Image (cartoon, rainbow, N blue to C red; front, side, top):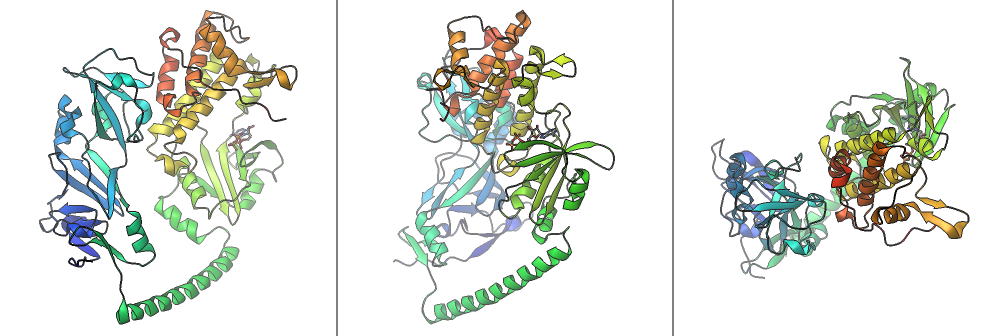
Length: 535
Ligand SMILES: Nc1ncnc2c1ncn2[C@@H]1O[C@H](COP(=O)(O)OP(=O)(O)OP(=O)(O)O)[C@@H](O)[C@H]1O
């Protein structure tokens, strides 16, 4: 291996502080994946620019560096967006191609694809938006692709004559206006190459490039290395003994102090103080009168009716499955405690004590929607669940989901490990299936006479819609009902499309439900086959 200058493990970079691999000083390109320029400028207001090996002009100021992530702002794009100039959406200002090296590569984490097209009349799926305020071209974009597109994504053929550009995205966006959702701030994550990961993991080596630009892994060897290894073994042994002692101490301490758990406290500190109350398990027992009144059973545990000291009724969900060390649970509690939306049940408190976990929700006196839509004699008080109420519920649920997907700033992967960029479209699917069941007032899979003559409701209603037949459902009593049911049906058939990218975003669902039924396009047939019941 041809030798190159040995890399320092970290370096000072002016106002950005101490920086380490995978970032490097611009004078030592061979020491990292992304090089920072201007670190030696000592003036306090100096800003750093990353050196980009790209044809794209412009200065990229570094705003923040954290672990393997760097946030930059593109000065030229910032000016164009600020002055609302359409040049912002041109090749000159699209995201730069970042350099790759044998050490790794970096990529933009939150990006979207925009198409600028000369034609106004492209036939595109429903999820595409068109922005027509630029003089020389129209801008098209697919609302489904805000989480970043794979490079080989099969875009519709009608976009072939358009130019395609990548841009960074803002967190909160107005789908209708690219000036509001395109961001001059780009968050890039560095991915290390496999050989670099191996070098750092196993050999505890240092990745760098040799003078020919080839990968090399520097490990300490020889006499010095032997002493270092012995030292490491000694330190690891001391640490192990310490960990065992601390664990033993904590177990005893937790038994004595059931309200406190070491890990949770530091976690709560990290999230700031919660707006909700923390209960002990015996308080939960008291609130629920020793779990006397069971409201129902969910996938994660049983739900009991309870009453707080101030008289308020609550629903207490006792979680049965214990997963992980509780960090996920507290993370979700912290996120949920910050949600506030008229269509989302408020979380009032929680219990986290040893292996006991519970969630305290505001009480919904009308119970589960399920009971009201499948039960023929369903009533709220003395009022039957009519078509208007079903429609209001459908819009309300969509608004609640929209708030969770976009409105409340909680990053999806923080809100729940089960939610995530991908699962937004799974939520839309579940939402569609639920609305179809509301429309049909029956489960989507209904076995008619025997198991061989089952009717898959989405099939049935889709066929009626495309052949222009009356929907003929018991919900429909007048023209107004007809309009609402048609809207709910068409929207939910869009939501249950087999291909997630064809499903609308939940914001689009709200927009479609609030618009006129005659403006809605019929979706493609959303399923290949009906799911059959298991014998
Ligand atoms: N806040 C509440 N007020 C009144 N009843 C409730 C409340 N929360 C839950 N329930 C009752 O308890 C049942 C189970 O609720 P739970 O949320 O655990 O289940 P789920 O929504 O069916 O499934 P999952 O476990 O996937 O969340 C509901 O069907 C409902 O009858």
